[in-house]
Amino acid sequence: MKLPQIPPGRLIFGIVLIVLGIVGSYFLYGLIFPPNGLQQTSMSPVATEENGGAYCFIHEVQPDFIQNSIRVHLTDDDLEDFPLIGKFIRNPGNFSKNWHNGRRTVGDFTDYQNQYSDFRNLSCRNMSFEECHARQEPVVFEYDGRYHEIGCLPDFGGAHRTRDS
Image (cartoon, rainbow, N blue to C red; front, side, top):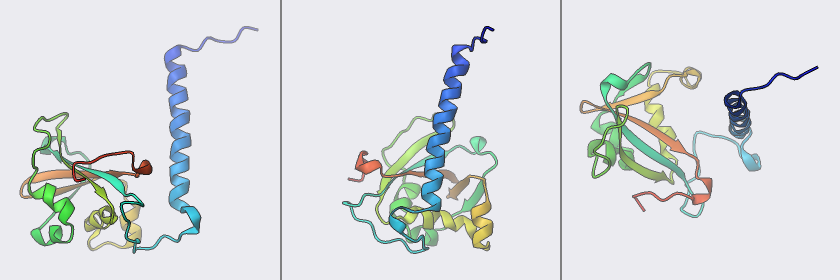
């Protein structure tokens, strides 16, 4: 009996899906079971440069490109507690002036104090913890008529360099 031929495109797509599944499972396992038996609490220990921090980036988004997102209006009082994030949201600086797919980078930083999760929790005002973390929609932050998305990647051993260092 002759085995069916698999087109190369499908084979590559299948391999990519398997690799993404493995990486995603590993990441999810790390969230559920923190390394070294650490308990996850709402208070994070203060990280130092030696311990590393997450690499975070801030994109300004054109309103026409915002879809199925939770929009959070920010005030000056909100940004006072997060000076590193507020610096880029208030003043986009000298980053990319070019738009790509309705977005442009206005800032990046290393989050040594793990403030991004606290900042993201501003979108959970008047919600319970369970309601907030059960949501699947992305969050877009609006300040002074401009919209921003913020994302962070793990440290990966300090392999990145940001403009704030």
